[in-house]
Amino acid sequence: MSGARRAFVVVLDACGAGALGDAADYGDAGTDTLVHLAEAVGGLDLPALGGLGLGNVRPLAGVPPADAPVLHGRLHPLGPGKDSTTGHWELMGVVAPAPLPTYPDGFPPELMTRLEALTGRRFCCNRPANGVAVLEDFGEHHLATGEPILYTSADSVLQVAAHHDRLAEDELVELCRTIRAAMTGPHAVGRVIARPFAGRPGAWRRTEGRKDLSILPPGRSYLEAIAEAGCEVHAVGKVRDLFAGVGITHAHAGATNAAALQRTTALLDGELEHGLVFTNLVETDQLYGHRKDVEGFHAALRRIDAVVAGWLGALRPGDLLVLTADHGCDPAAPHTDHTREHAPLLAVFSGHGGRAHDGPLADVGASALAWLTGRSEPGLPGLPFL
Image 1: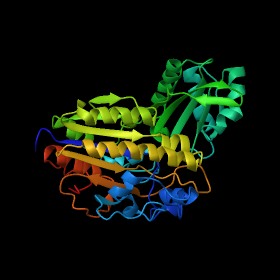
Image 2: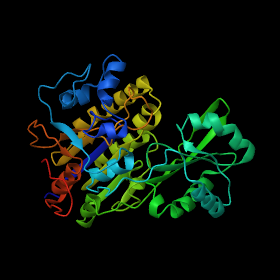
Image 3: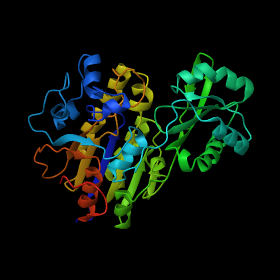
Image 4: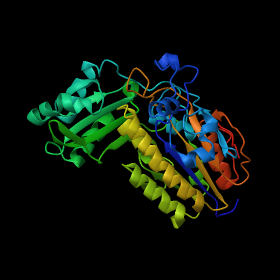
């Protein structure tokens, strides 16, 4: 393999492409994030993604099938879950052996007692909640008492929100590190998330200091195989946190799509000579998907589309560009949680031939390894689509 080869895997967070066969088990029967988003906004305006074949993956209002698509299709997980942790893990060949623990009724009293003893703090809330609504419900109480807001969701997460005036960001992260170390065994939750915020009642705003503290991946990943082959592995956005740093050689901040797109563009434009860039674009999930803000969701996709158009003109002959997702967040679903869906696949590389390809999410990691090194990793799931 040429030393000039590069691979870019970009995750459009929550951009699901149709319900999986077991979606009903998750309360997600009939979900189809991109299709329902397109219907809600009267058609999507995504010329670059459409030209690559997004409309060949699903029938999308405003995005007709491309006459000359790149490799395109839908990917599915091999294991349970519908969150960012398991979705990103599976893209790199890590399949959770069992569902990560969730807490639909909040965390049990004995666990809360332990966490309060370890941290020396009382917490408020302790229930599943929307990350914005929970500030409206408990923000004033938090300011008055100093009790951090501890909550969860349908995902395997424990989240702690604290106001800048009550707990500095570094103190909040350290508090979450203590909690992360305690969440083991049956309570080995997928992520402990620090959620700093600012503002006043009626005008709360979450700041960019979010920190995801993930459980260690339960198995070897394609990231490790790529790094061990001597390639750089750059994580942009929350990717580094989702893998707890395992297999990552360089990490780049990307709390906003603008920041993540800018860093990815800089790497593509010449900072990276040989290796993998694995990018998460969080806002379609965090800012718009959970809030069912379809106009905001569409606007975020349009901004991504414009940047992708620039990438297409800057790709080198030895480059692989993969655009995909990790799960869904259907605006038509009866809840505000993630949805159990396929991920779209668009892959740009020399010799793609416009083929259709459906397979497991792990095919992405297998393809990145093969593209960069010419090697395979027989112990991991997935096959190259190259």
